[in-house]
Image (tube, rainbow, N blue to C red; front, side):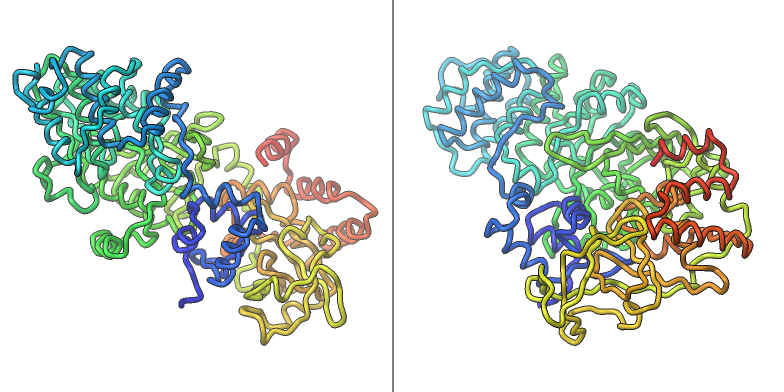
Length: 640
């Protein structure tokens, strides 16, 4: 078996999302094998972690690890928005669950209940209903929609319990069937398929920004039609609304929703059960020539594709190396837009700055003008990932094009500046005031760590339970994890190891660990945290090693800069990642101070290491060296 797993394989084995894998790295439950490229993990370590979770050794991870297998059910509060509605939905959901009724059949009978209430369907007795006699329907297409869905349900039962659903009180909501469907689906099923409903206010804002009558609008992952339903308030012709989804129940609900929304119009909704990524060109409703004025959606994130499907996607989208589902949907949607057409997607914030997503950032920059990026925070119930809204226009970007950034405040930045960033990072957190501060630092003559340092990863033992002890025994010495690294200092050691490199899975040359002086830093961190070591200590791979090799440039000066608030501000604004990467550190400027200034800084660092002064003294000295004003200092401290 391959000893190296990528993040998708790791999340599949542990039964968690990619975002949760990254979170567990941050908390030292998982340790990546490498530093700069795509995240990879040791198969043995992942298998051991899975076993420890299953055996209850790490209780706090059980809930997250079992999320994809969870039977827990909940109503998305951000979508229902009404406690009275929730009570009625829970009554229906409890009845369906306790009666062990099929979700397919339950939704079928509830839709009949709803259509009858809305005066679009009339029948006298149960058996008459299932004849699908045309005389029962006010709209001829309702008959087609119901009969098609009925015929798609295998082994349809006529359990009398289903008849009770025809009498249930169904509350008023523009997507009440969708809410009931969500309440019937388990948390595990939602997690596996990435099917989380977008808060109504987010959808409404997108619609109000862009939707105009007579536009052709598509939701390529339409679910139960949330975006299309709200867009319908501004669209007089329902034939201009299009949707795709792979979930047949969701597609059925969307059709019912649109028929209800446009009751006076006799039409068949342009909603089909197809895979946007694979089946778009072969759909009878669409063709490769079909283009859209507006594409709006919240696509699935971190979807695990079957091997056969993944192979096809790789051939269709060779420019997407990350195999991330939202990247495929974004790339395909750009293709489907008319020239000048607009796209608005809800996506995880990681698309902005994670290296693996440089592929889709490149696609965006080559093919679109970014209109707006808005930070939305944690927008979904039971989902802990920060999300953004990104709006794109399919047209060549002009040299002076600015996009709007909406976070705590609103401002505009030039899109073309992303092209000069490493990995095409969308550094949207840098506004004009931030830029003026950063420019002060880069305005001085400087060198960098690139080609001027030695680097080393911490040790990967392959089995920490076997090699790491919590007490110091004969032949054992201290070894430090990322959580043991503080600014300037290492914590009192809690872990010990016998250094037998031939037995470890991955180990740097011993001279790197035994350097006369080196810097040890947290690898998984959104902050720069560097400790000084002149005692030749060992580290595990959550704590990496930097040995500066710049003539007449003391290591302690590098230490003081990298630990300073000013450099933390620069790092946060330019990179903003959960990993402290060598490539990013190599871009930070190391000003060419005079010998006197270097001596003064070294003297201050020595006093901090001796605990004679507080590290804030160095922080203030660094601000002074670069002429940072009081207003700028306050801004920096508030930012970090």
